[in-house]
Length: 134
Image (cartoon, rainbow, N blue to C red; front, side):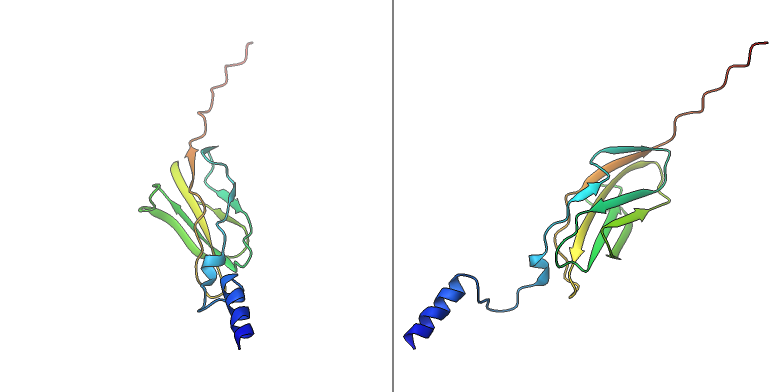
């Protein structure tokens, strides 16, 4: 009996035996946004493609886009993105903040990525062509 107790103690304290169910989300890492880069400027576009690192154990991702860093003014939210890239279109000119988090099969959500900011600006004004010399 003493040897079983010693073996159990060794396995328990080494982390090989877990008491209770650990949530899947706690095992999910934080994604890293690959593109666009922080403080990117896009001129005259209305669609942006986002890419991030694949997270082991994630079955889908939660994408959030807001007009403020605290995500109080969310303009796009999709918790069911499969894959590691996503396009958002019909964006107006202005500054945006993006983040993504992984979700496990059991729908538990992992940590959000670092917040990424970018700006969409109008295209440069068209330059008037000088009249041709005759």
